[in-house]
Length: 250
Ligand SMILES: CC(C)(COP(=O)(O)OP(=O)(O)OC[C@H]1O[C@@H](n2cnc3c(N)ncnc32)[C@H](O)[C@@H]1OP(=O)(O)O)[C@@H](O)C(=O)NCCC(=O)NCCS
Image 1: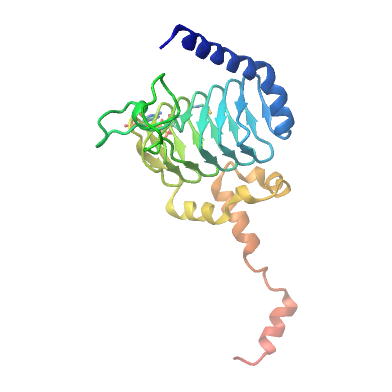
Image 2 (image 1 turned 60 degrees about the vertical axis):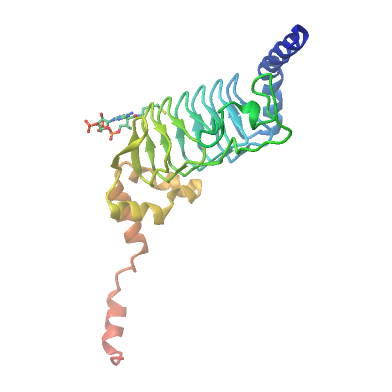
């Protein structure tokens, strides 16, 4: 490779830094006015944000959809992710880093299957390997600091990923996983409680409902009782009971 080409590439990477710290804050403010970005955070134009999202310093988001009131803590990099509402994405999380072939292909080096130019060599005319697969993260998911989520993984509603985990397989709803590779540690609730939460889908409710019921959230039992009694038919009044008695049996 010529010296000029090397110089050109290092100039381009410096330009990227200028773009991120000088130009991006204004672009993000214009393009995603409802989303709060801290300094040094950036998101590509093909990202989508619901209301109330907060992206902390030095996060990098590419082709990612984020549901309402989710926050993404500092230094996290997300690519090709669809994230639900009310998620807590910890600091330094990596999701969607991309794949290299590890079977059949002679080499793992992208020069032989990618046009992206990761190195200074590209030996093919068209791509011949799926480098990125979409990642699905449900609602009310908590991802601990420094976790890594592999391409193509799906994480169910209410799941927890422990700090430092490497998630390479799908995670069931309301399951806590941890370790390398991540394995289930325990369920957050009983089967009946999980069924209740999946049916309730509280994250779909409007803000007024959530504010009104927030006092019940510290104890799932109290929320269940309150919602069960609100759907149970009201007790019959003395007059209607008397009416019932007078009606002939069916
Ligand atoms: C996973 C986590 C949520 C704890 O879950 P928990 O079920 O309450 O965990 P416990 O402390 O009861 O431990 C249960 C078991 O899981 C193990 N464990 C806990 N955290 C773990 C982790 N991050 N990775 C692997 N194993 C973990 C414990 O060693 C214990 O194992 P044992 O039963 O063999 O003794 C917590 O450890 C964690 O990782 N939190 C993330 C913190 C964070 O990153 N915060 C950033 C703010 S957004």
